[in-house]
Length: 81
Image (cartoon, rainbow, N blue to C red; front, side, top):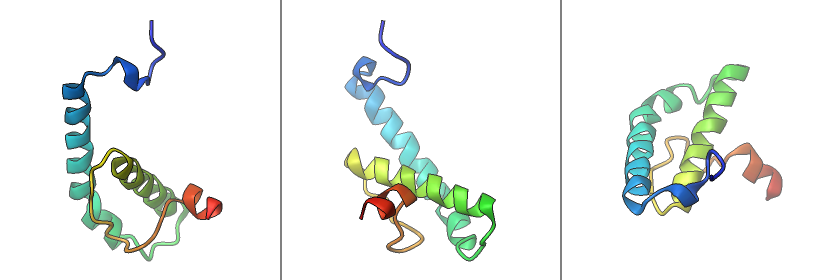
């Protein structure tokens, strides 16, 4: 049995469906994320970091979604740079 969260168990059709759903979600929430760009609250920062992590993951899967925050990158990537 495969570990939960393993991509090895997914068919190419399932991966395409997940990429499509994540892309839709990212595009749908782009306006909300952009509107909270100047919000310094911990909640808004966490939401932006999770959103940017989603964009980064989609990019690694070959799905390009415009970043509503410009050139901002997830906190993990900023630390590594």
